[in-house]
Length: 66
Image 1: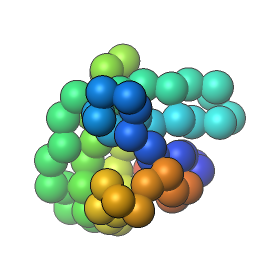
Image 2: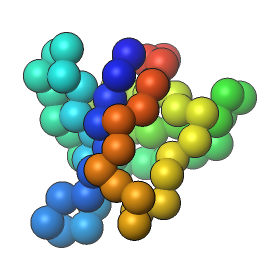
Image 3: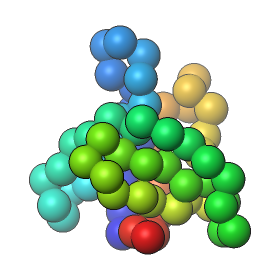
């Protein structure tokens, strides 16, 4: 699924999922088998092949829901 990563005003990483009209803050980042696993505030876990550096945000990426 396509997701957009950006930084909020507090400097925290936020994920927006357009198809679900969902915007949640990332509460945890971990290394997974296929890349980085981001845990959102609502409990969702998304796997991305790579998370770009903060200075390259906002950016739209492909993610897999675990």
